[in-house]
Amino acid sequence: MARFRNKKKMLETPVVKKQPSVDHLTGEKIPKSFVFSRGKVPGSLKQLELDLRKTMLPHTALKLKEKRRNNLKDFLNVAGPMGVTHFLMLSKPKSVPHLRVARTPQGPTLTFEIQEYALVADVVRAQARPRCPQGIFNNPPLIVLSGFGSGGQHLKLTTIMFQNIFPAIDVNTVKLSSCQRIVLLNYNTETKLIDFRHYSIRLQPIGVSRRIRKFVQNHNVPDLRNLKDVSDFVTKAGFGSESEADEESATVSLITDIGKENRASMKSAVKLQEIGPRMTLRLVKIEEGLCSGGVIFSEYEKGKEESQGCHGEDKLSTAEEATEAN
Picture 1 (cartoon, rainbow, N blue to C red):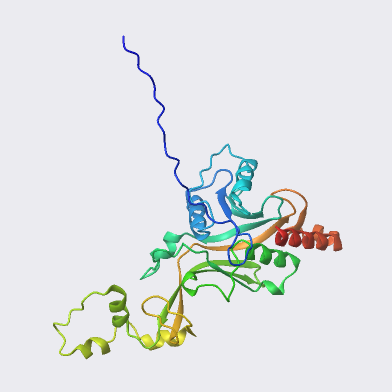
Picture 2 (picture 1 turned 120 degrees about the horizontal axis):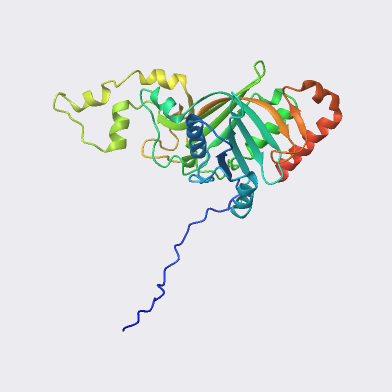
């Protein structure tokens, strides 16, 4: 009887393109993140987790798989070899959802209550002309913080945390074509709430009608059968008044060409369009370690914070130094 031998098949090892861990221009470490949930969360909060992952692109694990039996130590063991610097954790311990932003591996951890939130689908549904061009998530967003300078040490630590969660940019070397998204965080001193917004950036040449812009973008042959002269196509107004749109938005003079429409030395209008998600946050607690350690700030325990006095301020300063050093 013939014998059959199991021959080992030689499989080619796939080449995985690794993202750089150090910026080749600035030489600084590129921050990377994990976005995941803790405990049982509703479906809408799970979708918010996916939307936040997309916001943190490209330096995040978009298809991070998590299981209920995974604990924080499991994520931390994987984060080290992958160069992950921040955790964004969603949970719903009671009636109010929480977002914790932590610096790995030793903290600090900022805990926010999510007072309100809207998903990407909700933002898109409310817009007449939603805009999300291809390739917009190939580069990290710009980060803009407003209103945080008028608060105490806890707001300063919040500023440092969010500034370091996205890669720093060098205004002398950055390519304007890579600046396509912006994350805005605005702190209201009266309500003590933080508005989180995510926008796409669009440049629009001033003095060019909507019809001409569409023609340059699409290269489609226009239908001129009902027009007496080609000048009618150029001068005919499109949807809305272009001059009014230009007056309402900021204008810039470009130093390089961006796309087919915006040319160097021309003035262009900078337009922002919200792409979601959006959140209204309240900072309620800051812990020294990674979801553990001493509480150095608590919104609902003011008496305890005041009794700590200078010791509490020293802990906040130490946490700031640890966040910047890491």
